[in-house]
Image (cartoon, rainbow, N blue to C red; front, side, top):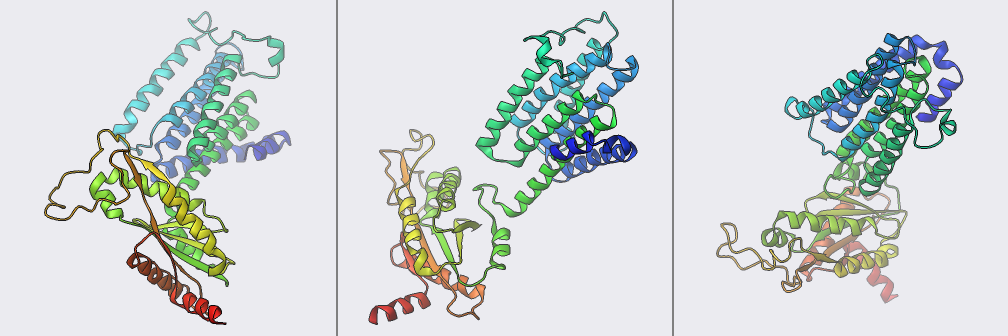
Length: 415
């Protein structure tokens, strides 16, 4: 998107169609703010407000000083510094939804920054008006930039923080903030108020708008806890399956006992652990969380016999994974009986070592494939569930083939 803005600005398209750019500019902010509010994305909403107010502040002082001189230049410099700082704060903040109680502290912060900008952007000799004029390095090296060196340093630090956050979380908001901040500063460097500058700053809003769309997609098609594709994504994937394919049902053994014994926080951590191993399944499989402790893996273009070694490796990998309980010193022993478990035999997982404060979990796996070209996907899913049930009855922590696959295997052995 930044490349498209550069193409439009440098080719003169923005200048030739300045009225269209103006309309698109405000439309991008309006649509972006509406979507961010609709999907309760407080971070994107805040970023859009920061960008819009920043550009408007620079435009106001430039109009007062009739160009990038005096207060106009000071406004550009202070906004170029404050926007990266604000974007870092937005990246580090948690999503809180868009409502009045959560918005008040942010509005107060923006008000403080606005007062600060208004004070130092008064006609000289205003206190602090030269605050951002100083140079860290030789000024001749930065003759190409209207953005001061202090703001460029803040920008580089913000880029590093946003890249680190994106690496840790791999969420669309972090990458959206990074590219939107970059487009905004390029727009400031282009003059902040003409058609070319508004093309860059408007594209900043479009980038943030796109991140909201990505967030909404992730909400619909990705499980929030584990990060795996959700049941809705699975329903879409199964409708596109073509022969041959394999459907695998996976269930965590004794998961209810984990929740009852160690608490739901530990249960969530176990789900994430298993999901991470499922995401690494070999053989071209794609894992989905379809509900609770239940997962499904799809193998397109494979047969059941071909994927059995991969599933055995997956089962063993999960069995060998050691989950260390958070606060193991505090949770070294299981919960006492409560109203739900009183009078019942403890459901404590057999693989738990209270001395070590560790929890080992296992999974049961059922495997099925279509027996004929007329077989329906739902029938194959039913066969995989039946195989999973047999794995549970046979002692758990094992991989079982569907009945049809088992029959074919027996016939091959007889031959």
